[in-house]
Image: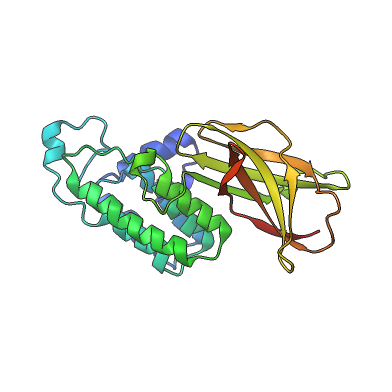
Length: 269
């Protein structure tokens, strides 16, 4: 416990997390993540160690050096990943801790060998819980992080048909950037994850929440390439945009057709 409080460097965190890579160690992390008597910052520290402790419950290492015989000997995962997903979805957690748990699933490799069927089954059970939470939550930020958790490290043919091949979000520009767009422009930040290769032309849509009227602003850069990325920028507001409360999001075009939209933010313009 003392070491976890004093560890700050990336490599020290990795080493410490791997030290919890036993069934008892993983249970210790879960117990303390749920302990509301501990400060949030300490519970988040335990949550940050989960990924390096590994996702295979009855293992004492994190996988890369397993022999086929060792993998074949793992016939149960103790519903470990499903339990983690249930903690994230069903418990009254601080938003930061909930997000830490969702980000754990963004680091699960999803490349288990066929001779660990219990882990594959556990992943699927956890996905069912996360999909339920995705349908339930009203937070655009959480929806985006859940979509990332459900599609990252997968090939397109591994995705459920109800999941997007592009997960993305548009947000207001972070005030700490100290960026102040000129009059008539909108500052924003964005993030995306794409499962399949390709090149998409994004644009920014403004939908008046009251009237439903939609206006379009051009993307202030080149087409999006690569499987993941993000950043911050600004774009000129659409001409003749009337005063109102707007929902603002990205649209991704392929061959002139909108094939995906991002999660949005709202603003008075």
